[in-house]
Image (spheres, one colour):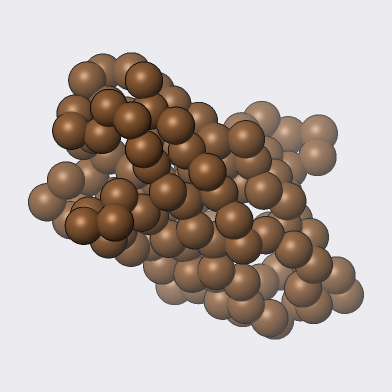
Length: 115
């Protein structure tokens, strides 16, 4: 089992920035990827950004050039730096970890972008 705790969501004006953080605990030794998904109102959950062991990253086309994912393996943390936020980025953001082939999710943190 892996437990995930997120922080950093909130309300921000369009064009602003937020940084999400997620701390993993528990059976962390099998983690092979960490990342962030999001679910906007009325839409399906989608990948925002992910990073696998070794550093390769994957971003949704809609966030490329604006969002940056990073990991601190010593602290078992993953971050999502979100810049130039747009109204369309409003969503609940979920930390995701894959460990030993199992998917684990955080409770979600709300990001609301206002005009």
